[in-house]
Length: 244
View 1: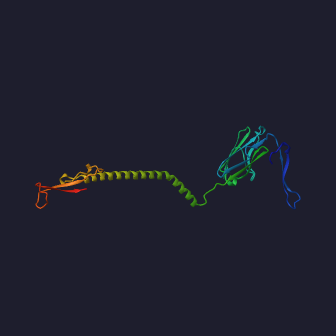
View 2: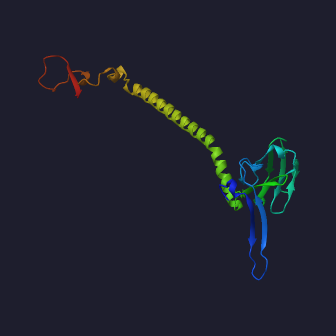
View 3: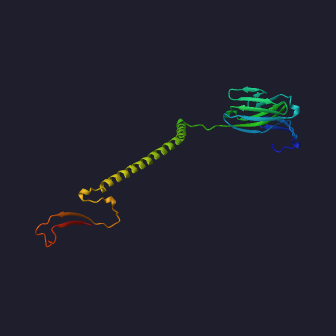
């Protein structure tokens, strides 16, 4: 019944027609529609996950502040008064500010606790529908183990990144040092190769500009021998081997 007006005040009933029975089964109730209700709830529908808590606030008019107040369940007619009550499944705490508000807190709810409840103040009732959703759990241990492994892998990523960076640094440093040592060794070897002794009649190649066109000559002075040719002008002949 929605958008009720004052004109809707009156007697109503639920009826069940039973075949073969003279009188039907009925339940009568009287509904009063007023601008400011003597009892109401902040929310008539509450949804929560298993294991969670709910808080329901029931508002009543001043003339009901001294009336007996309860929180009840329609299914089994179990009611709780203003205090804390612990059951085998959940706990209920009801507090009254003795002015206009009754607060109900339910903790540790299970799916089986779903159903209709109501605030009761004197002879008035305000219904509330409670829906407890089941929490998704792991279907088997294998699935749980996979999630645990994935979580552990995520925790190892920062360490793996640090180790990888250290490995790259060590590798680059090793290559740089090895190349530096190789260049130094080649330089020393070249100096030893280019350095030639003057006693052998050789030339120090390191002092020569490689861009110049140079002819090297080994000169050997030999005593004059007979029958060497028509060059008899001088006493001695100088022979030279020229390499280009």
